[in-house]
Image 1: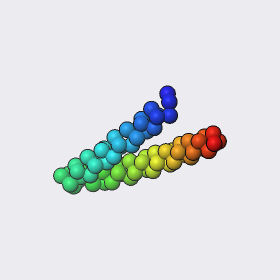
Image 2: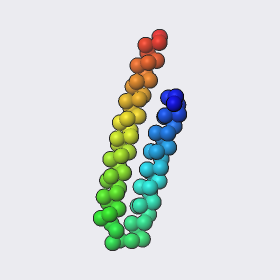
Image 3: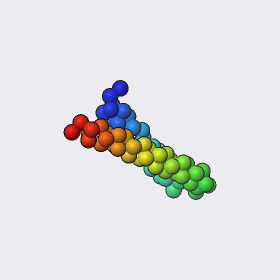
Image 4: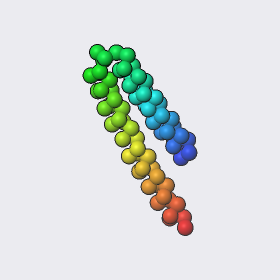
Length: 71
């Protein structure tokens, strides 16, 4: 798998997690009894998003290092 495909897959996964996040927020408005569950899911998804961003930053640093070494 090349770097572009891997990057696209990471971004697709991140967007899928965001859609889940927004859907849960929308459902919580309709179902107040599920607020605690939604809160826990939101926290879990936010943690995943933060982890994804951290991984993407590392990959960007790797790419930058590779590009700098080619100069």
